[in-house]
Length: 174
Ligand code: GTP
Ligand code: MG
Image (cartoon, rainbow, N blue to C red; front, side):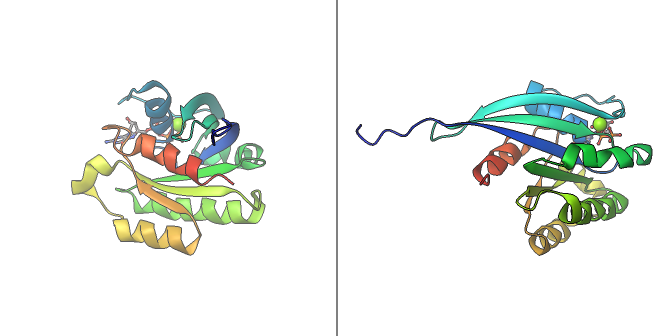
């Protein structure tokens, strides 16, 4: 038929993990609604949102997003959300070395208990706060490389690299 490509419609379960306050909910709000909330409230348990994007080859990808709660008291719930997830997005805040250490903890958890073919992304958020940066870009690159992850720095505040994050994930789906 003239080489036309059959359109594909993919549905992808994605989980966001990372310390409280790193900006997980703001990343999702930016991606799904194009908004930023400077007074974003801590997530309780988890919240669910979905968003569909179209790729250049007319594939559509519907992300079913589980935005987990980063506070320690909710840590035991995380497996409920990352189990069976095709994609895990591990977020830290570039101004917080503690949040970077926590991100590495989540990466290990996912390697131990996540699905073996899970696509993992490491995200350094709050890139707009460069003057307060305490985690270098190279630290992020090294950690991601060591763990076979895709790496990107984002800002939910300015929208920098937010759509790119999800587009790059879509390209890496098996
Ligand atoms: P939990 O739900 O507790 O796990 O936290 P969270 O990771 O969902 O954090 P949330 O998205 O609620 O953001 C926490 C705070 O960081 C809020 O005050 C946001 O406005 C702020 N914030 C989020 N993203 C950015 C960003 O890219 N830049 C700046 N400057 N602030 C941000
Ligand atoms: Mg949240």
